[in-house]
Length: 324
Ligand code: SAM
Ligand code: SF4
Image 1 (spheres, rainbow, N blue to C red):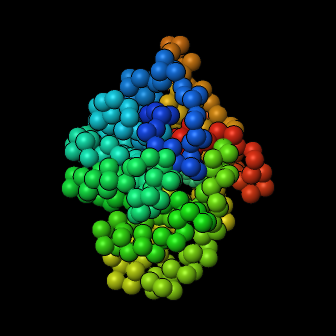
Image 2 (tube, helix red, strand yellow):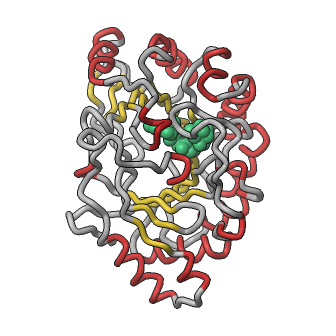
C-alpha cells in the first residue's frame, strides 16, 4: 500500500483524460481561456494504462476519470475497459458535466464504469446558462436520464453552492435529488485560479444546520465512496446529502488521493504546487520497476494540507487543469 509521509494511504487516483471542456463554469475555467495542453503532450491510452497498472501494483484500487470534460476524449470507453480490467482496480468511476452522457452512458457502463458524479449547479435553465456559459440544461437533463437508464449506481450530483448565484436553489435541489434517487453533494467553492476565487464563497456549515432541521437529517455513519464528503441522511434512510467543506472544515488529514493531469503530471494536492512529471519517464523507456519507484518518490512529495484559507491567492492553476 502506498503511504505518504503523514501516514495516509493513497489508494485513489483521479485521472484527467483531457483539460478541455464544452462548458465554462464560472468557478472553474476562466472565460476566453486558450492555453490548453497540446495533443502531442496528452498521455495516450497505452501510457495511461501502463501508469494505472503501476499504481495498482502499489495498492491503488480506485480510479476516477475526470477532466476537463472526460467525455470529450475520443474512445473513452476503450480506455475505461482497459482500466476496469487492470488487476487490483476494483472501482472505476467518472465525473462528468453530462452534456454528452446521453450518447455515451451505455458504452461506458458496459466498459466497467460503475458510478458517476454529475455536475449540476441549478435546475433553472437561465441560471445554468449563466453558470456554465451556454444553454446546457436540456442536454444535461437528457444525460442524467440516460445515466439512470444505463444503471449507474449511485449517481451523485455535485452542486457548487455559491452566494447570490444558486444558494436560493439548494432546497429545490435537495427535493429533486430525493425524488430522483440521486445523492446530492454540496460543495464549497475553492480558491483555485481566479475563477475559483471569484465564485461567491458560501460557508456550508450554516446551510447544513438549516437543512438538517428542515429535512430532519441525521449524520450518516456509512462511507459513501471513500471521499471527503460528510453525509447526512433522511429519517427513513432513503436519501443522503453530502457536504464537501474544503474551506470551512478541511479534510486534509484523511486525504487518500492524487491527481494525474492529461500531460502526465501528478499533482499531490489541489491546493499546493508539489508535482511529479511522468511523461518523460513513460516516453524515455522507463521500466515497470522504475515507474513504481517514481510513484513512491512522488507520493513522498504529498504535502500535509492545503492553505486555501491562509493563502487564498496561492493556486493559479484552475480546477480543469489539475483534474478536479
Ligand atoms: N467536467 C466534469 C464535471 O464538471 O464534473 C469533471 C471535471 S470538474 C473540474 C470536477 C468537479 O470540480 C466538478 O464537480 C466541479 O463542480 C468542481 N469544481 C471546479 N472548480 C471548482 C472550484 N473552484 N471549487 C470547487 N469545486 C470546483
Ligand atoms: Fe467544465 Fe467541469 Fe470545469 Fe464546468 S466544472 S468548466 S463542466 S471541467
